[in-house]
Image (tube, rainbow, N blue to C red):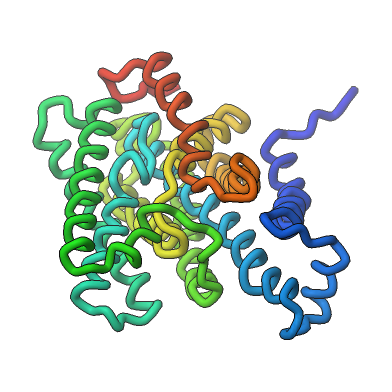
Length: 338
């Protein structure tokens, strides 16, 4: 009798290979061609006087690691949002969470221009939380506001509103050049110091997501079902929101707004692994990390030798997927339990 390897096991066990492949590809290919031998020497025997070594250590390696982390953060956030709201269109970019982070960073740069990196991370968290409260608060006041399409529309409106205010403030205070980084994601400008600073927070966000994963599975079946099985639904949603705020805030502060990763990847993970969020969340992290890393590589060759913004690449994939979801599942009601 043949033994069939579970898809979840296959994804998780193959993740080290996929991640290493993504890093190698990201480091090797770019506007400047660098051979594998130079990459190896730059990692093992770094020479500060060698320009290629400088490019690899201070640009390409942080970019590769950053794209992996951001992809994982956004995918986990999207999975949590879709599970706890039972809304198949929920994601950080569509619900305005990313825009809230960028808005808070803009205000921080105006009011407190000398803020440290840790302070920027903190303001990004506050911005994410602010937008979550606004979007879901308004949705709860509107008849049918929590339905998938209406919630997505409301999130898009709030996100656009916050982006517009940020743009106006940036122009008035003449910081448009600085703020543009967070509204036009630029992975090649990732600060390695911020990556190191983000890792402890990322661990907290991921652990919180995994601890809640079983409860999110029950919550995805419906609040009544979850409550009937002894789940404290309000507390679960609050803790899940904290995880989303942390992970989304980190992704924005690292490289700016990147859309659709949190929408696409959880659906792929759910299709491959089933409805158990104990499997969906870690698989989303792996698939999201690898997906964004290869999207970043692709962005370098669409208009070579010039780079295409990573947001354009994810949008080209994400917009058709978004429309497909609306057509396939409709938009009037919250998703029914499978």
